[in-house]
Image 1: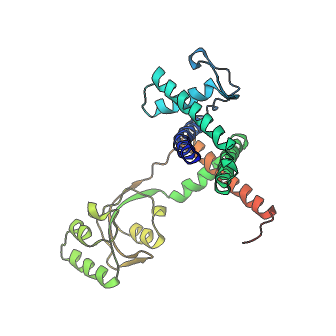
Image 2: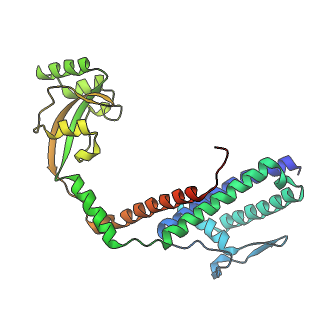
Image 3: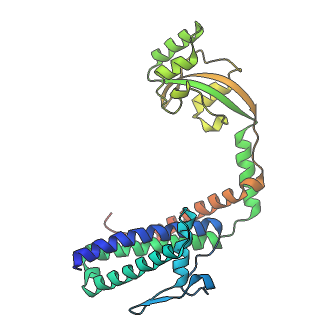
Length: 285
Protein backbone atom coordinates (compact mmCIF):
# COMPACT_ATOMS: atom_id res chain seq x y z
CA UNK A 1 0.00 0.00 0.00
CA UNK A 2 1.50 3.33 -1.01
CA UNK A 3 1.23 6.52 1.00
CA UNK A 4 -1.68 7.90 -1.00
CA UNK A 5 -3.67 4.67 -0.66
CA UNK A 6 -2.89 4.56 3.06
CA UNK A 7 -4.20 8.05 3.54
CA UNK A 8 -7.36 7.31 1.54
CA UNK A 9 -8.08 4.18 3.59
CA UNK A 10 -7.28 5.99 6.81
CA UNK A 11 -9.65 8.82 5.90
CA UNK A 12 -12.47 6.39 5.09
CA UNK A 13 -12.07 4.25 8.18
CA UNK A 14 -11.23 7.18 10.40
CA UNK A 15 -14.25 9.22 9.36
CA UNK A 16 -16.57 6.28 9.99
CA UNK A 17 -15.04 5.64 13.38
CA UNK A 18 -15.05 9.34 14.31
CA UNK A 19 -18.78 9.62 13.59
CA UNK A 20 -19.42 6.49 15.65
CA UNK A 21 -17.38 7.78 18.56
CA UNK A 22 -19.00 11.22 18.40
CA UNK A 23 -22.45 9.61 18.42
CA UNK A 24 -21.48 7.51 21.41
CA UNK A 25 -20.12 10.54 23.26
CA UNK A 26 -23.32 12.49 22.56
CA UNK A 27 -25.47 9.58 23.76
CA UNK A 28 -23.41 9.27 26.94
CA UNK A 29 -23.61 13.04 27.53
CA UNK A 30 -27.40 13.02 27.18
CA UNK A 31 -27.96 9.98 29.40
CA UNK A 32 -25.37 10.97 31.95
CA UNK A 33 -23.55 7.61 31.60
CA UNK A 34 -19.78 7.89 31.64
CA UNK A 35 -18.09 6.84 28.41
CA UNK A 36 -16.14 3.57 28.86
CA UNK A 37 -12.39 4.08 28.89
CA UNK A 38 -9.38 1.90 28.32
CA UNK A 39 -9.02 1.55 32.09
CA UNK A 40 -12.64 0.42 32.61
CA UNK A 41 -13.06 -3.12 33.85
CA UNK A 42 -14.63 -5.05 31.01
CA UNK A 43 -17.41 -7.53 31.67
CA UNK A 44 -17.45 -11.07 30.35
CA UNK A 45 -19.39 -9.93 27.29
CA UNK A 46 -16.69 -7.47 26.26
CA UNK A 47 -14.08 -10.03 25.26
CA UNK A 48 -10.37 -9.29 25.51
CA UNK A 49 -8.23 -6.25 24.85
CA UNK A 50 -6.31 -6.41 21.57
CA UNK A 51 -2.69 -5.35 21.17
CA UNK A 52 -1.53 -4.23 17.72
CA UNK A 53 2.19 -3.46 17.45
CA UNK A 54 2.15 -2.33 21.07
CA UNK A 55 -1.05 -0.26 20.79
CA UNK A 56 -3.88 -1.47 23.02
CA UNK A 57 -7.41 -1.55 21.57
CA UNK A 58 -9.54 -1.97 24.67
CA UNK A 59 -12.56 -4.25 24.80
CA UNK A 60 -14.50 -1.39 26.38
CA UNK A 61 -13.86 0.78 23.30
CA UNK A 62 -15.23 -1.96 21.05
CA UNK A 63 -18.23 -2.28 23.35
CA UNK A 64 -18.87 1.48 23.27
CA UNK A 65 -18.86 1.56 19.47
CA UNK A 66 -21.07 -1.52 19.33
CA UNK A 67 -23.60 0.09 21.68
CA UNK A 68 -23.68 3.26 19.58
CA UNK A 69 -24.41 1.18 16.48
CA UNK A 70 -27.14 -0.85 18.18
CA UNK A 71 -28.72 2.42 19.30
CA UNK A 72 -29.08 3.20 15.59
CA UNK A 73 -30.85 -0.09 14.94
CA UNK A 74 -27.94 -2.39 14.01
CA UNK A 75 -28.24 -5.81 15.72
CA UNK A 76 -25.46 -6.57 18.21
CA UNK A 77 -23.97 -9.73 16.77
CA UNK A 78 -20.54 -11.40 16.94
CA UNK A 79 -20.09 -10.55 13.26
CA UNK A 80 -20.76 -6.86 13.91
CA UNK A 81 -18.24 -6.78 16.77
CA UNK A 82 -15.72 -8.65 14.64
CA UNK A 83 -16.11 -5.99 11.97
CA UNK A 84 -15.53 -3.25 14.56
CA UNK A 85 -12.35 -5.01 15.73
CA UNK A 86 -11.14 -5.34 12.14
CA UNK A 87 -11.75 -1.64 11.48
CA UNK A 88 -9.88 -0.64 14.63
CA UNK A 89 -6.97 -2.92 13.77
CA UNK A 90 -6.81 -1.53 10.24
CA UNK A 91 -7.05 2.01 11.58
CA UNK A 92 -4.14 1.37 13.95
CA UNK A 93 -1.97 -0.29 11.31
CA UNK A 94 -2.59 2.35 8.64
CA UNK A 95 -2.03 5.19 11.10
CA UNK A 96 1.25 3.60 12.20
CA UNK A 97 2.34 3.23 8.58
CA UNK A 98 1.47 6.85 7.89
CA UNK A 99 3.60 7.94 10.86
CA UNK A 100 6.44 5.63 9.76
CA UNK A 101 6.46 7.34 6.36
CA UNK A 102 6.41 10.78 7.98
CA UNK A 103 2.99 11.66 6.62
CA UNK A 104 1.96 13.04 10.00
CA UNK A 105 4.65 15.71 9.56
CA UNK A 106 3.22 17.03 6.30
CA UNK A 107 1.90 20.56 6.94
CA UNK A 108 -1.70 19.91 5.86
CA UNK A 109 -1.90 16.64 7.81
CA UNK A 110 -0.26 18.13 10.90
CA UNK A 111 -2.75 21.00 10.77
CA UNK A 112 -5.71 18.60 10.55
CA UNK A 113 -4.34 16.56 13.46
CA UNK A 114 -4.02 19.71 15.57
CA UNK A 115 -7.59 20.77 14.73
CA UNK A 116 -8.85 17.29 15.70
CA UNK A 117 -6.91 17.47 18.96
CA UNK A 118 -8.38 20.87 19.77
CA UNK A 119 -11.93 19.75 18.96
CA UNK A 120 -11.61 16.73 21.26
CA UNK A 121 -10.25 18.92 24.05
CA UNK A 122 -13.05 21.47 23.57
CA UNK A 123 -15.75 18.79 23.79
CA UNK A 124 -14.09 17.29 26.86
CA UNK A 125 -13.80 20.70 28.51
CA UNK A 126 -17.45 21.52 27.78
CA UNK A 127 -18.60 18.21 29.25
CA UNK A 128 -16.38 18.69 32.30
CA UNK A 129 -17.69 22.24 32.78
CA UNK A 130 -21.31 21.08 32.52
CA UNK A 131 -20.76 18.32 35.08
CA UNK A 132 -18.88 20.43 37.60
CA UNK A 133 -20.84 23.70 37.38
CA UNK A 134 -23.45 23.99 40.10
CA UNK A 135 -26.50 26.17 39.55
CA UNK A 136 -28.51 27.21 42.59
CA UNK A 137 -32.17 26.16 42.47
CA UNK A 138 -33.16 29.63 43.61
CA UNK A 139 -31.56 31.14 40.51
CA UNK A 140 -33.37 28.66 38.29
CA UNK A 141 -36.65 29.37 40.06
CA UNK A 142 -36.16 33.10 39.54
CA UNK A 143 -35.50 32.55 35.84
CA UNK A 144 -38.60 30.36 35.60
CA UNK A 145 -40.79 33.01 37.22
CA UNK A 146 -39.35 35.69 34.94
CA UNK A 147 -40.10 33.69 31.79
CA UNK A 148 -43.50 32.67 33.12
CA UNK A 149 -44.48 36.28 33.77
CA UNK A 150 -43.31 37.35 30.30
CA UNK A 151 -45.56 34.74 28.73
CA UNK A 152 -48.65 36.60 29.91
CA UNK A 153 -52.00 35.01 30.71
CA UNK A 154 -53.16 34.05 27.22
CA UNK A 155 -51.95 32.41 24.04
CA UNK A 156 -53.39 33.08 20.62
CA UNK A 157 -54.33 31.24 17.43
CA UNK A 158 -53.91 33.63 14.52
CA UNK A 159 -54.07 33.68 10.74
CA UNK A 160 -52.23 36.14 8.53
CA UNK A 161 -51.27 37.23 5.05
CA UNK A 162 -47.85 38.76 4.48
CA UNK A 163 -47.31 40.98 1.44
CA UNK A 164 -44.58 43.34 0.28
CA UNK A 165 -46.43 46.67 0.04
CA UNK A 166 -49.00 48.58 2.01
CA UNK A 167 -51.23 48.93 -1.06
CA UNK A 168 -51.35 45.14 -1.45
CA UNK A 169 -52.36 44.79 2.20
CA UNK A 170 -55.07 47.44 1.83
CA UNK A 171 -56.51 45.62 -1.19
CA UNK A 172 -56.62 42.37 0.78
CA UNK A 173 -58.43 44.11 3.64
CA UNK A 174 -60.95 45.50 1.15
CA UNK A 175 -61.49 42.03 -0.33
CA UNK A 176 -61.98 40.51 3.13
CA UNK A 177 -64.44 43.25 4.05
CA UNK A 178 -66.51 42.19 1.01
CA UNK A 179 -66.55 38.59 2.22
CA UNK A 180 -63.35 37.31 0.67
CA UNK A 181 -61.99 33.92 1.77
CA UNK A 182 -58.98 34.46 4.06
CA UNK A 183 -57.60 30.96 3.41
CA UNK A 184 -57.66 31.35 -0.36
CA UNK A 185 -56.17 34.85 -0.26
CA UNK A 186 -53.33 33.73 2.03
CA UNK A 187 -52.60 30.64 -0.06
CA UNK A 188 -52.44 32.73 -3.24
CA UNK A 189 -50.69 35.90 -2.06
CA UNK A 190 -48.84 35.44 1.24
CA UNK A 191 -45.05 35.68 1.23
CA UNK A 192 -44.85 33.62 4.43
CA UNK A 193 -43.81 30.25 3.03
CA UNK A 194 -44.24 28.65 6.45
CA UNK A 195 -47.98 29.29 6.62
CA UNK A 196 -49.30 30.07 3.12
CA UNK A 197 -49.86 26.42 2.23
CA UNK A 198 -52.21 26.12 5.22
CA UNK A 199 -54.09 29.30 4.32
CA UNK A 200 -52.05 31.53 6.63
CA UNK A 201 -52.94 29.62 9.80
CA UNK A 202 -50.37 29.87 12.61
CA UNK A 203 -49.90 27.59 15.60
CA UNK A 204 -50.95 28.51 19.12
CA UNK A 205 -48.37 30.92 20.55
CA UNK A 206 -47.88 33.56 23.21
CA UNK A 207 -47.54 37.17 22.00
CA UNK A 208 -43.78 37.16 22.68
CA UNK A 209 -43.36 34.60 19.90
CA UNK A 210 -44.06 37.31 17.32
CA UNK A 211 -42.45 40.64 16.46
CA UNK A 212 -43.98 43.46 18.51
CA UNK A 213 -46.05 45.17 15.78
CA UNK A 214 -47.65 41.83 14.96
CA UNK A 215 -48.35 40.85 18.59
CA UNK A 216 -49.69 44.30 19.48
CA UNK A 217 -52.15 44.20 16.59
CA UNK A 218 -53.13 40.58 17.24
CA UNK A 219 -53.85 41.03 20.95
CA UNK A 220 -56.01 44.10 20.23
CA UNK A 221 -58.40 42.00 18.13
CA UNK A 222 -61.50 40.18 19.27
CA UNK A 223 -62.07 36.58 18.25
CA UNK A 224 -63.01 36.43 14.57
CA UNK A 225 -61.85 39.97 13.75
CA UNK A 226 -59.10 40.92 11.29
CA UNK A 227 -56.99 44.06 11.19
CA UNK A 228 -58.60 46.94 9.29
CA UNK A 229 -55.28 48.65 8.58
CA UNK A 230 -52.02 47.04 7.38
CA UNK A 231 -49.58 46.04 10.11
CA UNK A 232 -45.98 46.82 9.18
CA UNK A 233 -43.02 44.80 10.45
CA UNK A 234 -39.49 44.24 9.20
CA UNK A 235 -40.88 41.42 7.05
CA UNK A 236 -43.42 43.49 5.16
CA UNK A 237 -47.13 44.22 5.68
CA UNK A 238 -49.47 41.86 7.51
CA UNK A 239 -53.22 41.37 7.55
CA UNK A 240 -54.00 39.48 10.73
CA UNK A 241 -57.07 37.58 11.87
CA UNK A 242 -57.56 36.35 15.44
CA UNK A 243 -59.07 32.89 15.32
CA UNK A 244 -59.08 32.07 19.02
CA UNK A 245 -57.44 32.64 22.38
CA UNK A 246 -57.10 30.64 25.57
CA UNK A 247 -55.38 30.71 28.93
CA UNK A 248 -51.71 29.76 28.88
CA UNK A 249 -50.95 26.34 30.28
CA UNK A 250 -47.36 26.77 31.36
CA UNK A 251 -45.17 23.77 32.22
CA UNK A 252 -44.29 23.35 35.88
CA UNK A 253 -40.91 24.34 37.27
CA UNK A 254 -39.91 20.69 37.70
CA UNK A 255 -40.73 19.98 34.04
CA UNK A 256 -38.36 22.67 32.73
CA UNK A 257 -35.81 22.79 35.52
CA UNK A 258 -33.18 20.71 33.69
CA UNK A 259 -33.56 22.73 30.48
CA UNK A 260 -33.15 25.93 32.47
CA UNK A 261 -30.06 24.52 34.13
CA UNK A 262 -28.53 23.62 30.76
CA UNK A 263 -29.26 27.09 29.39
CA UNK A 264 -27.73 28.67 32.50
CA UNK A 265 -24.57 26.55 32.12
CA UNK A 266 -24.33 27.45 28.42
CA UNK A 267 -24.58 31.15 29.23
CA UNK A 268 -21.91 30.79 31.92
CA UNK A 269 -19.70 28.88 29.51
CA UNK A 270 -20.02 31.75 27.05
CA UNK A 271 -18.75 34.05 29.78
CA UNK A 272 -15.79 31.75 30.38
CA UNK A 273 -14.89 31.88 26.68
CA UNK A 274 -15.24 35.67 26.69
CA UNK A 275 -12.93 35.93 29.71
CA UNK A 276 -10.35 33.72 28.01
CA UNK A 277 -10.41 36.00 24.96
CA UNK A 278 -10.03 39.07 27.16
CA UNK A 279 -6.90 37.60 28.78
CA UNK A 280 -5.42 36.21 25.56
CA UNK A 281 -2.73 37.89 23.49
CA UNK A 282 -4.15 37.78 19.95
CA UNK A 283 -2.28 39.34 17.05
CA UNK A 284 -2.80 39.51 13.30
CA UNK A 285 -6.49 40.35 13.38
